[in-house]
Length: 183
Figure 1: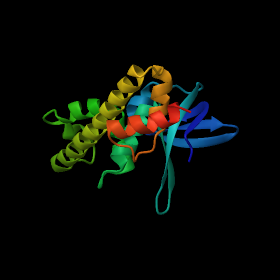
Figure 2 (figure 1 turned 90 degrees about the vertical axis):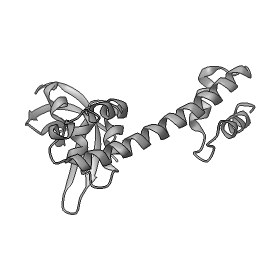
Figure 3 (figure 1 turned 30 degrees about the vertical axis):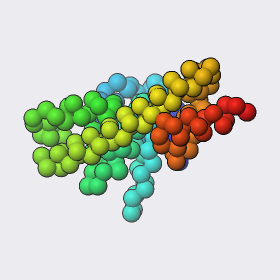
Figure 4 (figure 1 turned 90 degrees about the horizontal axis):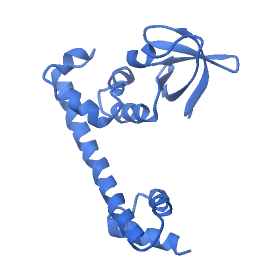
């Protein structure tokens, strides 16, 4: 709903900042790592996630789109709330978080998560990483094929990224892309 906000930081606390945009102060929860790098008075852009709860509306903020995507992935895991997802998303990417989580006592560093919950998150993240890498492999194979047919890499990649999710295999993606590229 609100993809990002750009404005001046007018207040900063331990868990959130107030970002002023056109006379409105938005309270945005951020990870401690992100808050460290931000100072009152600077103008910044913060990618946001609007969380609607039973009796509250909260905005969560991130300095990069990758962090936001990681937050959204974590937030979908059953039993993981937005506050925990926010803390874990500060690692930046699924791969980096997975590496950190594989350390022996990492769960002790994250408030509100025990060893079993951490193992569940790690298991789900491993599955998500496999899904993403399979999809990237399919796109790479299809891209190589389209380039070998003489299409420009940029145009072929744009076409492949615009295809519907139903085209899952390399062959299906190539056939669908060819229909578009021949026009």
